[in-house]
Image 1: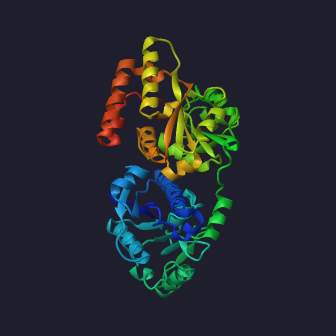
Image 2: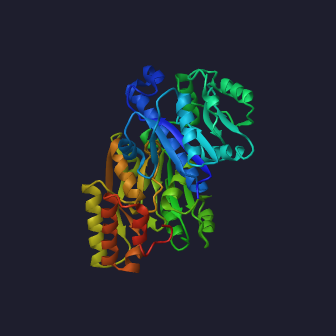
Image 3: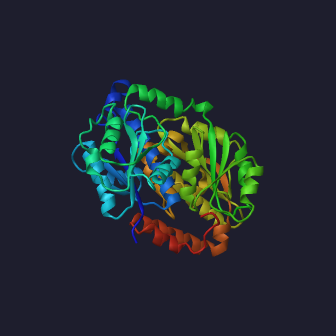
Amino acid sequence: MFPRDRLVLFTRYPVPGAVKTRLVPALGREGAARLQEELTGHAVLVGRAFCASAGTPWEVHFTGASVRRMRRWLGREIRFVPQTKGDLGRRMQCACEHGFQERAARVVVIGSDCPDLAPDVVAAAFAALEDRDLVLGPARDGGYYLIGLRRSVPALFRGIAWGTGSVRQQTLAAARRLGLTFHELRVMPDVDVLEDLAACRAEWPRERSATARKISVIIPALNEEENLAAALDSARSGAAELIVVDGGSRDATREIARRAGARVIGSPRGRAVQMNAGALAASGDILVFLHADTRLPRGYPEEVRQTLAKERVAAGAFSLGIDGRGAGLRWIERAANWRSRRLALPYGDQALFTRASVFRRSGGFAALPIMEDFDWVRRLRRWGRIVTRSSQVQSSSRRWTTSGLLRTTLRHQLIVCGFGLGVPPEKLAALRESRRPGE
């Protein structure tokens, strides 16, 4: 059975001097490359969120790097495809034909220059193709940030003056000549020149000073009525907003979150998917990802801001503390904290935190059924150090007490080794016999 739809993202690897060249005089080579990185990462985050919700396969068509480098940047679960040669029209035409050859009924191509791109925009594009031949997302500069088709139309991409302010009008004129029915989405900014950047900064706020940065705490949850109130209580002080991303709870999880003043949003089940959804909804300059069975230490906002005030720090986490008594749990704490500090590999149960801009640049969490935190932290190293604070979170001991300390620890180490060796995450997830609620 073949997928009905296909989403394609067009982008370039952020090589300084080779991307956003019209912005280099204002931003410099490195600054223009950082902007390209952040815009692309945002588009990837949107793609991950939409495709997880809609069950739509997607791929990233790129230039300027190898597949290996793209995976190191954005994650290995994405299908990366080098763009063909030729002008932009030829490359988009080939991308659409590729999807239709694989029997997709609708193909939508998005660019990586639109800071306002969101999953609902992509959903609206596919919906428009139910009864139209063509859908366009018009950009303010006269081009478009999205194009979708329900059949291959090579002539639509020919004779267009790419890179000019007449691209959209020329494309619509071609559509009329070809007898295509079409629909246009809302106009949004497409960042290519300095004027676009000014609009981007107005609608996509830059971060505030280190001491004034707002914190958004994001909690993925599934049937967490026993633990959620304590997690929210620990996070409330100093947080600009609390976001609980529910994966379909059947208990009182949503009610508890609302009573605590948290914003509740729904998402398909899966910790990575839920955290990405929360990040897209967040308004804070800093994102803290907190497990629903974990409590933050007192005074955590000051520690988070202090850690991320250093530009060379990409992300941070707290030391691991585990509720419960026993020498075995203390040994697990010591081993986890040694790994976290010496190897710069904290895990998700240590309340990972980062700047929102760095999270966008990373493309968010890979949509993996397991090891999404491990994968994300490894990819973050390209942006700076990973710091582990001495203050401890308090995490539930339930995963160890449910299956036993030795069994749980050995199973986890086997999963880590398998992930490093390239074993498919789906197979590794099957090894986790006793899942915590929400995983």
